[in-house]
Image 1 (cartoon, rainbow, N blue to C red):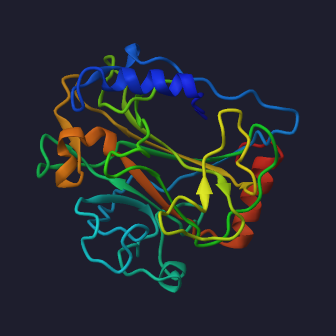
Image 2 (cartoon, rainbow, N blue to C red):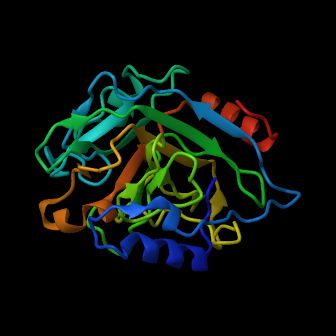
Image 3 (cartoon, rainbow, N blue to C red):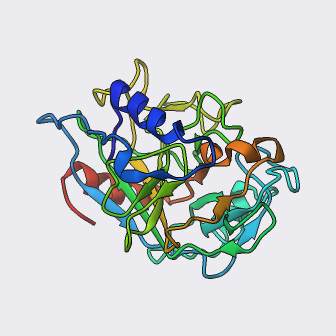
Length: 287
């Protein structure tokens, strides 16, 4: 898992923005990042979930996390994998009774803005790969996520919470806020790292962030929070080197769309299945 140190993050973001907000950046020019060293108490396992790549074309412009109960509240189109009932009006009961694209029966919902060929209203590109992995903490064991926990990574308005997501296969230690230019044969990636320090109380919060925060550069969670499994979602596309793609975004941020990339997660995994996941991660296994 990529964990950005403060200096590495500044370097990566500076490289990602140097050419202009929507100009592709050669991924090889982006400084690499490094993860904090694992301590003897680290939880070093990983749990991978296969939920397909949205072959079902489950898409809508709702946002259950940020705008529940509001049709078209996102103002841009989302790709979904996992829970097939996810829309603005999904209740916990609806999600728990739904079907899923995940092979292990995971009912969770994973979603992000679609990628398009060309401009804002052009053809939607189905991902060529989606890899979902839950990881541990470099400094301790993790505790279970509560069912129906909701979270977000990134900033749909390209504001202060924006995070570099853009990368290329073979270069995942380098992430940018700008679209990447990948070497020939290297898949374009969007890498979403989710927060993993839970306050122990909330399933959500008014800003959808306060209840679940990122650990520090040393891997430790903020005071009065607890490490839960770290979700990493990697979405891949086989795209031409010349670019010509863009993500859906709010109309007011089209000029800096790549920095508005973001993703959401709603945990609907059963308590028993989450306990199995936690045991896998805490015992250092690959599941």
